[in-house]
Length: 145
Image 1 (tube, helix red, strand yellow):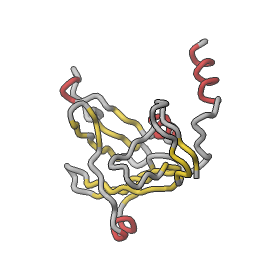
Image 2 (cartoon, one colour):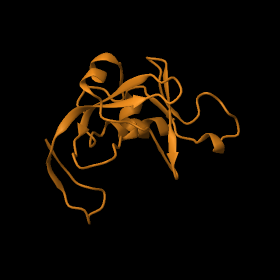
Image 3 (spheres, helix red, strand yellow):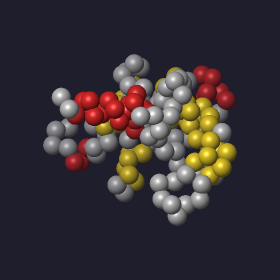
Image 4 (cartoon, one colour):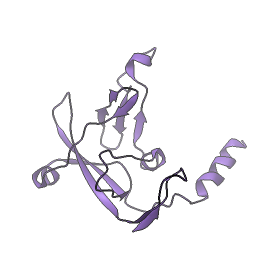
């Protein structure tokens, strides 16, 4: 459990938010395969309709996201507007809702969770600490070269 505060002071702090490993099911729109997306160390807000993911978390897990919509790219490639899992060689195309890129997912059934290929969006360990200073130190070192 953690206490969570928003980036705006006008929002109240959420107390005792559970940290969970969560699963979302995705039906691939072109191959019709079902995948289970696993998010470890996720904050669980039962009333929230959308899942949000910090980009640093999936990048640390070697999951690539290209959020440039195809219509904005000068060169069409198979790596546009998708989430790519290099370890599994799986590409999941993103959709657009206005200007927001998203994946259409649903709660997996127990059977889906047991039987379909799992893709980890985030790592299970080490424990995610958003206040860890390692990232800012590494960024300063990289920018000084």
